[in-house]
Length: 268
Image (cartoon, rainbow, N blue to C red; front, side):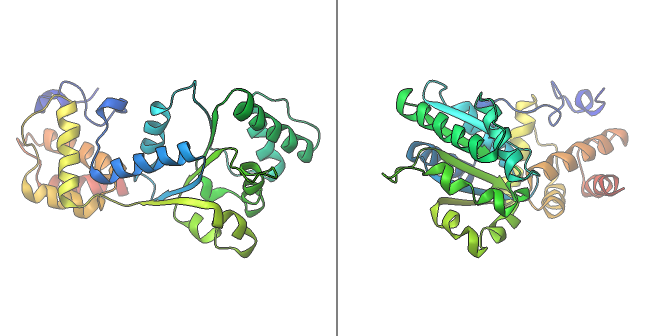
C-alpha cells in the first residue's frame, strides 16, 4: 500500500503505473522523435535510437506501436538480443508466424519470402523493432542489409529500428558493418531533460495522479534535477522515495533533504 498518496492528496500513486498513450508527457524533443519514427516507418528506412537506461526509449517505442494501424503496418518486436545469427533468425521466423528450418540459410530465405509476401501481396509495411540492440553481435547486425534490401530493384522491403544504449554507435563504426551504417537514415540520441522540462515532467505526473498544487520546493526541484540529470526513470524513482520520506516525516512539502535521503536509499 502506498502511504504518501493519501497524505498529499493523490488519487493514486503517481509513479507506480505506466501511463496510457494519451497521458504521456510530450515535450518538444519527444514530439520530434515521434515524428521522425513515423517518417522511418512511412519511408521503410533504417533508424537508430540510443539513450541511457531510463531515458525514454521504451516509452517512445510504446507510443510508436500504439500509433500504428495493424491494417497498414506489421510490427515485429525483438528484445532477446544475446543470441547468435542462427538463433536470431529462428526468433524472427517465429515472430513472423513461420516454422524455422533446419539451417540458418533456409530460415533466412523463408523470412525474406514472408517479408516479400506481406509487402507485395498484402500491401503492408513491415516494421522490425530491435530493442536492447547494443547486445547484438556484429555478425547478427551484418544480416540486416540483406533483410532490408534483397532484390535487384534496390527498393527497401521493411523498416528497421534499432533501440539501445550509446555503445551501439561504436559497434556500427566497425569496418565490416559499413554497409549497414550507410543505410541508417535516421539517428536520434535521447538525452535527459533540462531543468525546466524536469519540473514540467514532475508536475505532469502529479496532475495525472490528481494533484494540482505545487509539492516540491524550488530547492527540491534543483536537487531532483542535479541527482537525476533529467533521466525519466531516475526522476520517477527519486521522486517516489522522496515523497515517502516527506510523508514519513509529516512534512507538507518535499525539501532537498528528502531528495538526498531518497538518493541514499536507492544507492543502498
